[in-house]
Image 1 (cartoon, rainbow, N blue to C red):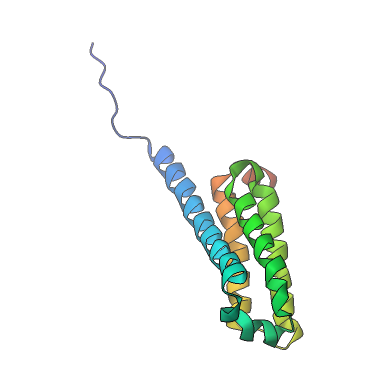
Image 2 (image 1 turned 90 degrees about the horizontal axis):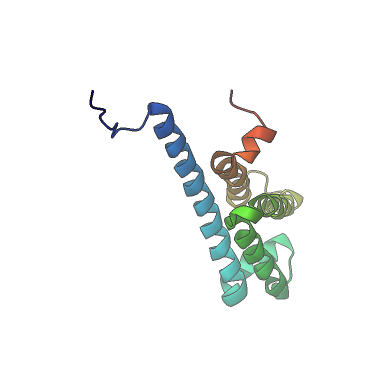
Length: 140
């Protein structure tokens, strides 16, 4: 009796593969957004001067905020430190949301973007790291 190799993966394996890639794509989007923002903070702070002024932050804070943002993005991108990175990223984004709430910009685009990035941070990690669903079994 000859045994033929199954060239098509099981549907469950395909689903898990797609979930993993969805998580990677979400996470990559977060990392790219944070790297872009951190880079602008460091190398082109004049582009965000009006936003900093509106939220009450001094321009020279970009020299501190930019590297912090870049470090958070890097920690989140590395699988071994992704959980720490996700915690730091969402803390950072929570501060950004708080800054906009403080000045009465509830529901403003920067606030909504921060909220979306925070959700994508944990959503991407949830889909790409099997430790997270084990801790937070949201889907049965």
